[in-house]
Image 1: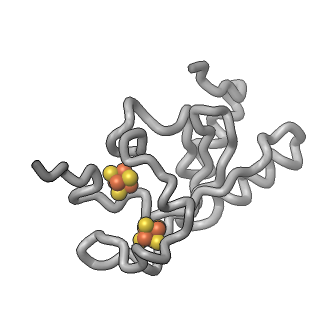
Image 2: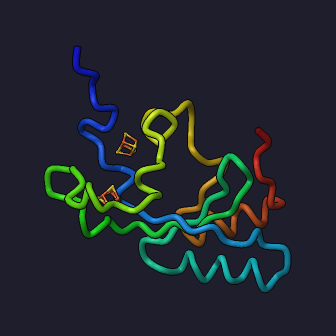
Amino acid sequence: MVEKNPCDGCDLCCRHVAVEIDAPESDKEYDQIRWFLLHKDIWVFVDNDDSWNMQVNRPCEKLTSDGSCGYYEKRPQICRDYSASSCERNGDGESFKIMWRSLEEFEEWVLDGKVVPED
Ligand code: SF4
Ligand code: SF4
């Protein structure tokens, strides 16, 4: 029997780039995150390993209109290593602890005491 492709009908992970950033400690570093979030298509999140990340919501240039990879043989290692069983669609629960999609969300969180949820 042919196994079903776990990515069928999904291209979520090809639609953004996430880059790890330093967890903010100083006022200056919190202000830098405010600056990130002022930009269109930029989100910031803390992943389940407590790493802080900046997410750029722009699709890969090699993503085809039918949602497949148009660069499959030469795709970067990070694409090869990404697990379709623990990804944002197929994994258990969210792939992050907290995410800010706007400056306002982040400022509210700062005013509320800067608490990152526990595991
Ligand atoms: S790895 Fe997960 S998020 Fe990425 S395309 Fe496959 S099912 Fe979608
Ligand atoms: S190279 Fe292919 S697998 Fe990697 S992000 Fe682009 S479309 Fe997705």
